[in-house]
Length: 218
Ligand code: AMP
Image (tube, rainbow, N blue to C red; front, side, top):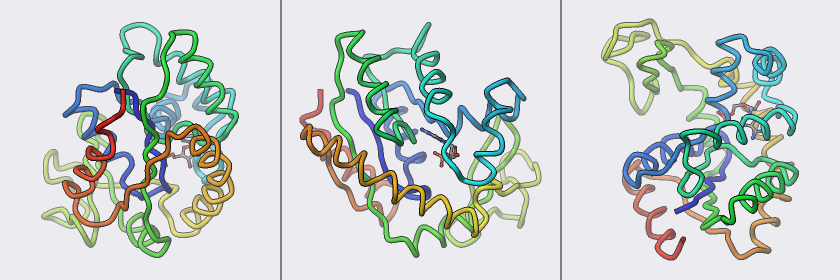
């Protein structure tokens, strides 16, 4: 099964993509995670990406496309995957199509998670993450608070907020998302791949909706 998950920041893409990966045995690729890791490790790509991430702008297509290509080399399987946060532009979508064609593969389904804007702002600005690389559990001040405020339940590390989850940056990310979204949705809709799923309610409900739309995906 080869799936692309699309949706605004805070739509639950990351959570759902990781669940799909775990339960269906799919390779998980999240470009946001890859980029944050590159910034943390201070790689060449990370140094270029850092400012884009902090201000919520899209990292240049070439850099992201190269990261995805590298990720699919070696031990990572290209024949079954779930993509989270990629492609975000038509240029990325066409680069990814080319990569798949080289392996005689195509996309099974593109699932768009749909959430109202106001709910997204509330979700993202309350999100706190454990910065411990071995843990990285996500909390939410309203929906999933830690037992002790500001401290990870599992490893006791002080929680941090992603720089791009601050309200001003969230609004900027939403604006960018809306601009880019029109084209990418049209791109996949024209190919009959697009499925829309309301991403409200609890995690299992949303997961089940996604799986239901995937029934016919290769
Ligand atoms: P995410 O975790 O998917 O919300 O991504 C966080 C940030 O990483 C975005 O606001 C962008 O700055 C950058 N980013 C992630 N994926 C991409 C992509 N496919 N193209 C360009 N920038 C990206």
